[in-house]
Length: 278
Image 1 (spheres, rainbow, N blue to C red):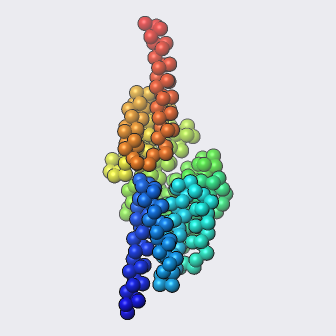
Image 2: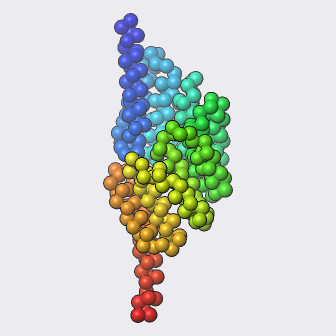
Image 3: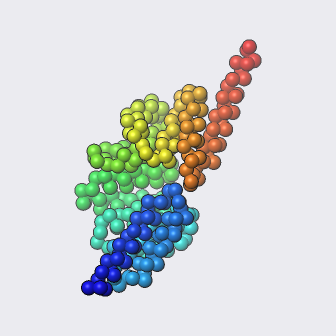
């Protein structure tokens, strides 16, 4: 009985570490790596006491942390360890597929990322998990976008939005909508993008994620810039910057600052003829 209680306690501790690594992945990468590595060490040490699904979850989260840190070869090995374990739990299995697809996307293996995500989609579809299926379609859209296949990307984002149910997490729906509108802007379909922003506005107003709110303002700035509404674009860029600079981990900040500088130069050049006429 005592050994059984100890096994349960170890399983709970591994689960706590895995959940902690997942929760902190965007704002504390060092903490994520530490929690995930501790989860793997404990899972391997107490392997005989733990369910296989929990060992898979630990290795998956460690692989994801390494991926986010740019340590791709180590991430590959960790995810291979996860894939070598038997697992019957669908969310654990599809999360491993999702993280593996992200790694393949990061390393330019787009075709295999598409194949992996289709496997995850089919698994969720068979189980009737429409919200999870929608999340994988959103991920698929990002891969197609990286491949330069905007029609397929738009189709994937639209499919995701159609699949989301009324109880789908707000940030997931808003993020998918953001990806759709951003792709419409890049494709030059500005009327459709403007309509998309108007439709998604109620979701954007309720956002609690600072990072996602910053991305929405950034997207709005790009749309205004393309519509030649330069002053509105400047305000939206400034709002995005104020939000993003407060985030502890913002690798996108350099790109945002560059776009802000480009807009300033554009506004300066467009005002010069007016000054000359005066």
